[in-house]
Image (tube, rainbow, N blue to C red; front, side, top):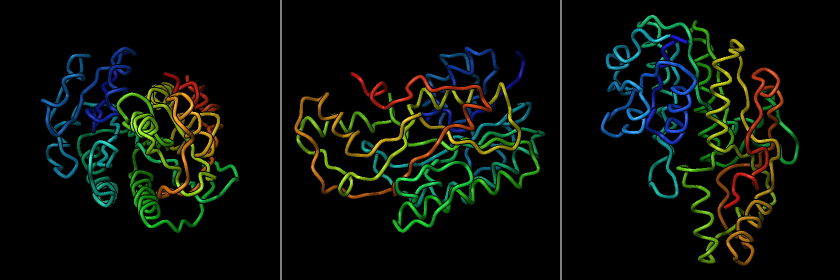
Length: 289
């Protein structure tokens, strides 16, 4: 296999799981990162490193030159261990994605893969959602994130290039910080349910997100936006009850702030079109420790 894959955001948590799998699958990989010294893992796996910034179009063109596929994983999301501003990530999606698209075209690329969020389908309560299901959302931060993600997707869809959009559910697993934070707070008696804990959350182990991306490159169902999620969405109460039981802690109590609306999404089309199935179809398998 001689295809060259450029990965923008290769030093992020998704990229750190994806790059080694791309190399192992036989692709030539170019890791595009703002600080090459932060991408030691990518280099150790055999990826070529190139300095590039989403808001520096010239650096992007140089980094993308000669690559067959460009994968945009660039995010700037806060996490339990990293303070930040969700608005910065929204700007990256709204303003940075058109720059990425122009750089891809100018560099002679023809195919792009864009990371997006399954939360664009949130707000349906207990109802199942698929790739065509959209709702109005009242939560301010979530509504802004969904609006920015939809603008990002529109830039990809109107790029004139051949594209895929992978809408990942909420990441958990090594390096994401989320489950580590849940277990830490559970052991300290500080884990709180979002509101009453009745809303659904759709999860995806970050290793499964990487696996789905490899499957997408191999199958390439052109110009499709696909939900990548585990098989079994769960209520927050069920997830946190399991975390507390594994941690040997008392069940989490209500009182936490809800940052996202309920979302219960189906991965049916990804399973069908990518011939992909998650290694961790249920959060209990992925969270076992």
